[in-house]
Image (cartoon, rainbow, N blue to C red; front, side, top):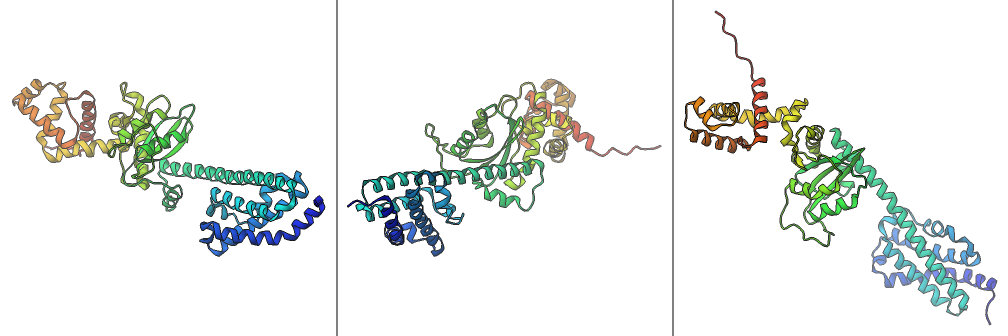
Length: 398
């Protein structure tokens, strides 16, 4: 004889404890991850299962109560359970609980079985909603933390908490770091930038400051590359090559790459160079995209960047001055004579081949080739700044 709904409800309340016990036993027998959990977490999972059974009985009594299913069931467990139990495991938990209930109420009639199926569907959607909200909250927190880290790097206000904040973001980079600065596109695709970086075995921190887009780039070996249509690079790429691959993710305008620094904590030095270069890049009419900040040293120095001035003196003028005054004099003459070998040779009373040999030594010493038009501008600026920095010779009095 079929039970009435009131009789079914009374019977379900009577067997609810039995159902909860049978569910925990089935979880222990069928789900290895559950049996390996610490006792505290297993107890929390048991509370969720028991709350699910109790909530089903309440819902069976009043099917209009669907909106509070998630809070009713998952509110029984501590919040840290969401961090230790994945959505897949939660769905396994729901499946086992539903199977136990179905087995026990097999003789309850078609109406009860249909109610169980409907409720299990709703509770599965509710579980997905709970995890989606948690993931969204986590994503917003990560975005705020990432923005805070990038702002700290750009401002140079790194404190003792910066390494822990970087670790909290799951930074995979190691070793050298560079900062890339460009314009923000109208439709910024952050996920695409991250996918491209992973494909290049790199990790990025992304910061948006109005119309300016900043990427902090670090190499990250053995990162999973999820870009399907392109093969992974066979060897480590230079930061300039990485910047060239990331270039489509920026808006129109100049794109400037700062110099390499040893680690992420010191990235503010690279950021200062990149920002200074980005501010003056328009002064170089044929600047490539991306352009290295050190290729904009003359413009940066003219704009008052002390880092550019010290770099020009320390990387160009001082090595030549300390290595060989002969090389420094040759470079002065070569640039003053419009990069003419013959005119330089006449002024120095040497053969043009001697000038060629000295120019080669200059290039080997400082890494810049004086025969190039752009390099000549950089070297000329370095010579001027170096000469200004030299102490004035004492005036001999009669």
